[in-house]
Length: 119
Length: 113
Image (cartoon, rainbow over the protein chains, first blue to last red):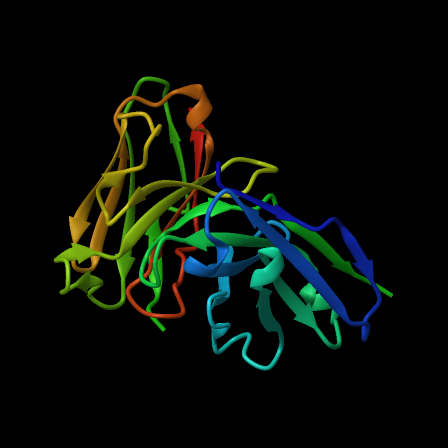
């Protein structure tokens, strides 16, 4: 059974760094792209970027390029989303999701990681 | 970026009636390699992650009730729920995966009338 299990709730202050995780199981992690999606409170879904764990090829939405870093460690089947300096506007639920192929829908989703940034 | 526009933003339908949600893309999302439209529909219930309902504009995912159907091609797409059930109350999103960033529509809130 394919599962994506994300790390837990985070409460941070502006300016702090953060790295959240998405651990995959039930399939060959290095063979499928993983996406990160933001959902701000009461808002819609926003595609942030994707990574291919097999070679760490990462592609970003222009809106998030330079704002976050997407990475993966195929030895432990885990993808990451990180910030070097959080802002209050980063407060959101963040989902990871699996793609069947580069050009495909998101067939499995993690449960989400809630990030709250507040002074 | 390809802009995805859904209509309406919210919709109230009586139980057992048909619900129809429209999604328009700013560019053609027909993938020439397989002659399929790179368009997906997701359902999101409160407190849950999105769930894939339909891929390639009209291919229903395993386990999705057959009252859900997708149609359309090029830039105009439709999600239809043939007979609304109480458990279908949710937000619905379309998404194009033709070119990155794989943008979503703004969402349509479906409620019971």
